[in-house]
Amino acid sequence: MRTPDFINDGWCLEDGEKLHQEFPKTFQIPDIEVRRILQIGDYAKLIFRIAVDDGDPSGSVERMWVIIRERLSDGYVGILNNKPTAIEENDSLWLGSELPFEYRHIISVEHANEESLKIVQQPPPIPWER
Image 1 (cartoon, rainbow, N blue to C red):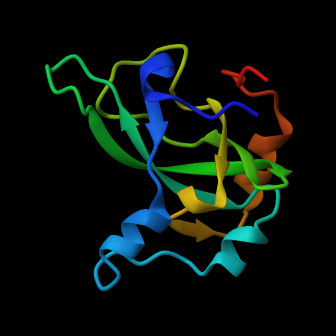
Image 2 (cartoon, one colour):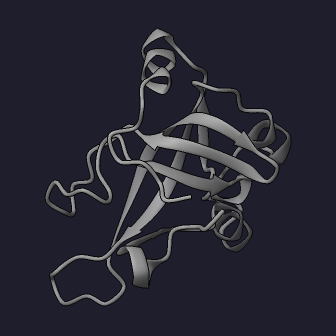
């Protein structure tokens, strides 16, 4: 499945494992065993790099929650559960956007709850092109 690309999509995901390797004392992530066993409805926090119109070519960085919707062999498909603050509402990256991600992108996890389980049962407002 195609992963988000900063140039083509206007946003991408940062590699949490790489950040943890660079800053092991200050940037903690869950063990890989935990990141691999998430279930439908669980939450995963990811780091998004988002293109913005302020002249900074590296974009803006936001940590946002995604709800697991589908399990893949090397990761998940989830639904964005936050509204990005660096950009205006749009039809490519906003609350309800579906997106694929890998275990390496996950920087925090939370268990499912009634609300998250209801959300993943609905069609995504902004589906990911498969």
